[in-house]
Image (cartoon, one colour):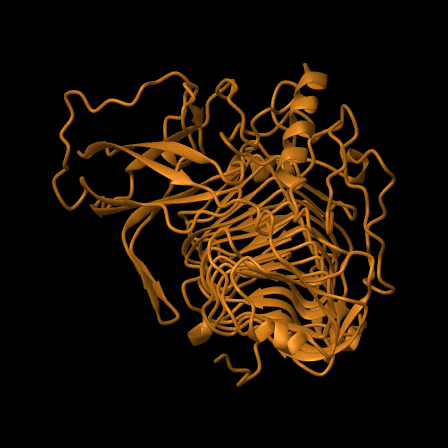
Length: 611
């Protein structure tokens, strides 16, 4: 049974991760300083429903139950009943779809929405993870409406799906809605496109006269900074690419700001800019950020960018003085704002924040964003800074090595902000997940964390609320202080600011110094038995470094930089077959139950970084 399921996982991972540009070759402002796996998550098939139930968010996710509102009132009585509003599916990406269902009422937040989906024309429905209940709120100058919100994961690019939603509130209110959503295709040049071969001397004229569908192919040589001057159109992008086999160096910036449907492919440059753009594709480039702040960047709202298979490096040196928000660091390797972006399979290293959304007043419409399967190394502050995400930012299947903080949600604006199947080795700060500034609605599933100090800690100094943690693997040990920042003392859990509406369970914890003490909210414990009996972690599992098939050492000091580690599980270890079933997240698991952590035991190693 495990062998068959692993085959399914491997196949779906290949489908999700193997798409790329088949033709790959080889007014925005900079004012101010910006502070700041596997892909088998729910991969699509027409197979059967998951084999067992889950009740996350109170939703009855049992297979086989047909949605019905027979005999139930369509509208509940306020304030506790639900009145259903509009359903929207804004900015579907290549592999995931956002679903938002606005509501009135449900003041006691006990309504829930079951979701299922299928390819258009198929008869077989598949369960999705229940939508998250998001009460209206505000934080840090932003506000959000009363709604249910969530994602359908692991879809196929360029494919139309039917989505069915079933809303029920025990205080009154029942509705069933169907919508169609079409994922974006992998960006490609137009078939039969005209190819215009250029040199440094003729590039300017070609750019100024380009027509939708044209491929402007740069021959070997050194080019000065240039600006893309014309727009393509849907199905007819203007492609600026290096000739296959040629080395094309741009001594400066490639500027795609305010452009629509243009591709930048296969160049070596210091910077690529795309603010105020729509459907810009940036693939297979080598970007070395030097004097400027960002490598690939949009400081103004852009829509639906595809940033994939690039190698992006920054000017920050990995040393103790560089660590933290006030460290000697510089540069955002990939920086963006706006909805619908896909940032996948990039190799990103040597920046302050390696992949980052904008913060505070600069953040605009940050939702429906995928950050998937990137290889992230030597981030002096945040590996992925998903701050000020409004909803449905999806940080999935990335590998983090040598990071001050792996993932930041500072704050999530109601959520959900998803962190799923990420692998972290050598995280310096006490928190691998920085859920600070009153973050609301973070969903943390199937991550593997091996770090100095506390295994799982969030020391926000301010309540973080409505988090969901399931099936993660956290291992810590002796800690230290680096550039004035503590990694913790080696406790298994330390969440003193967790609000009572968070949900934590089915996680694995370990500490190489046997410090099994900790705290979740106001509840403290001094042993694993007390962790399970006194907190919501009733199904917590005690683990150690022996859960891994390879011999893994605890990274007690972050220096020198560590090599990435193979954190696949050992057969029969304490982390195998002890997780909770979550529809559309761990479908196709092997054995009696899903495994803890990012990597299902026996599955092939994931592909991180450029393909």
